[in-house]
Image (cartoon, rainbow, N blue to C red; front, side, top):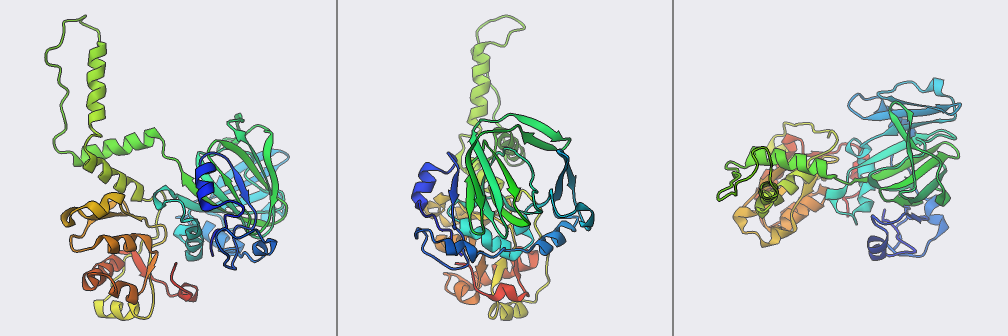
Length: 407
């Protein structure tokens, strides 16, 4: 499955819409492959199949380790409850929605579906939120600090999107923040395969026209508080000789005053902590490869001979939601400084080529033939064997995993 950008191109979308203004792609997703920028064909959307069914979603929502919410409305009174959930009988057939976070961390076809959006870098990607809504169900009018691609699955939903910044927030319940009624600049009913892109700061609301599924590919915008907190933690853990504030040759001044010169010195000291490019880059790699939500990491105990025999018949999948990232400066690094980032930690393999590290990071699945073509296949096989026993790669025993390797 590929994302069809028509009537735009990928380059036009990134240059003129990403982080700037919403756009509705009609029939962008289909189980029938089409060229990336092929003219819209209404038949494409009709062939789109939900990556996960409503019953499977309900099964995930029953698990304590999976974040889920039930949002309902009765006589204009909203209620939001956190999971797990096992019984939906009392909810009726309208005015409620089940929302499950990070479904791609627990369900392989949903992770494969998210790979359709690989035109945005992996370090920006957060998770796939999936919702089932009964007729007239939804989460209410709200605004996010996320970039999101809302993909319509089975059923239909009416989506309204307001202008940037044109909203006033209010509390619909103790745990549910809404916006007051807004004027829509987009007002459309989405059908299977349609994708609505919404940047941060645009109020929006989706209302199910019938029982329907929706898949939200989310990209969280990191704020300065989060970055500064992460950088401070990194600095405390990894900088052995922190710089000292100095004030030699200071001028006499009032006893209780902090002078402008003092403030400038302190500011410069803080800014100087980011002057060490290697440290800052290492922090960025660690920070953005660390998961925001729980991963399903299960350690294993393979014997190497058995593992190798398995790899010769089955693809090895990266644990769902696991991020493997590298810095673009990787190609310029000497072997002893060649590293990538896995689950928040740096991995340094001085025997690995730049090209092979990039492949390890880019490919969600590997087979024996692919690894055998690497520059150091025996080293990579040993390393992947160890990572499989750690729980970072796995063999999927379900037949749905055997269809094909990712492109």
